[in-house]
Length: 247
Image (cartoon, rainbow, N blue to C red; front, top):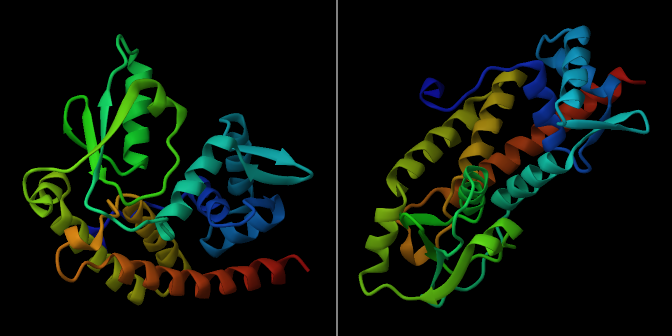
């Protein structure tokens, strides 16, 4: 049931943000964003107020009469795209181990590092030590290089047991299966929008482990396939609605 999922209420800001995050390039004129808002019963004035506030907050900038994402949200879009089509490489059994070696770190730097580690799909073994299987091809942000030293190693214990201790794999899989069912049921535009946003948030929490470490029947590929089909169909509907309203 969808009430057990992370379905967040639609607001003008969330509609604008999700629309631009799903667009390549992430830029649209205001009239198109207004038409998108109309799909969800959001008044034109409400959308325009949201756009002004998002510019003031540094979420959007205006370029040549259109609104586009700022650098911070462009990085979020890149992480979102990576979650949909992750760059993996063959796994030889080794693990990346990140040890925090920087001293006297301000609270802001500690928070930024934790966020960056989550983006790299690293799990915290204990305070100051993070690790994951070395099967991803991800660029490390500068904040990570400044605070950490990376090593490669192999655990003495069963790597499947280690992975199971570091990530809640049954929990992730159970939510993924509920999202697959919700995607298949979603019919109204608003329901599809909220379910799709929840799928993207869930994919960004996928640890992207090698197949050797995953439980049987892991639904990661299935969730991505269902999402891509649903998103393609909704994208065609959205484009027809937006274009038909701007002629």
